[in-house]
Length: 359
Image (cartoon, rainbow, N blue to C red):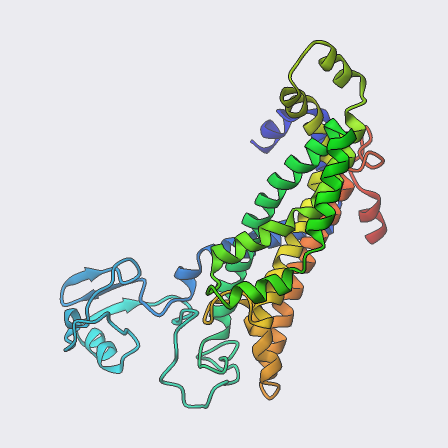
């Protein structure tokens, strides 16, 4: 099946894929990153303060999907059930059973049954310890990984659309359009992003979409020059001139003839744009201008490590998590750069020079 799907690809695409696979570090990094992201997507099934499924008094319950009142399990209040309450756990143990996730804590769960003051070091109950509020560090890392990757994915996609659109118009039309566009982008890129965020944070409580919108106003600027240069080069190619002579509209020429060539250099820039989005979110959360307090942020974990030097597991966990994530993305970016490099994509090439050097 794999051979059949590969055979439908164009020869140049197959050679690029062969070069990327030949870079073993990039290939392994890609699969490892996808595996970690898949695990984070199932965070609710791995780290949660509610049972996955349970049976009580002869009935089946799915606490992960439905919020049940405490009175459903012998409690006295019609509020949502706290399944870590010793009374509720005793009731369930006497009249049924519950299947818990491997980590019985969510990212916001405060462990009230701890025998040590917070932050507590790693033990059999909390594999990576707790933070200064008694929350499980491993659960926050899993949720924080997903939040960082989703934020970076959306921001990178939006930046890609804006960067290709603005850079394509500048590069294709050139002349005064290019000159005015360059001056405007230079002025816009000179605005102090951090100061703008500080000012806006005094009026609005930052959230995921608000922060994403602010970051999107500036994140596409680094891509404009790459796309503009590719459009400037491709617009003088013979088949583009022929399309113009045939009277095709500019939007059709840019979409069908120029953009596919420009995307070669653009795609090699995407992993590094992705990495920049993650580091920007982490830095803003570390400074306190990012996501709302309590969000499962890796930047907030870095800040906790700085503020709690007597709890080294916080700083070590944050450093290892960020280092692993960013290193994998950089290795993937290097593999894509080699795969789209014309010097490496030669007829019959199956390995990249970088992988041969690493070997």
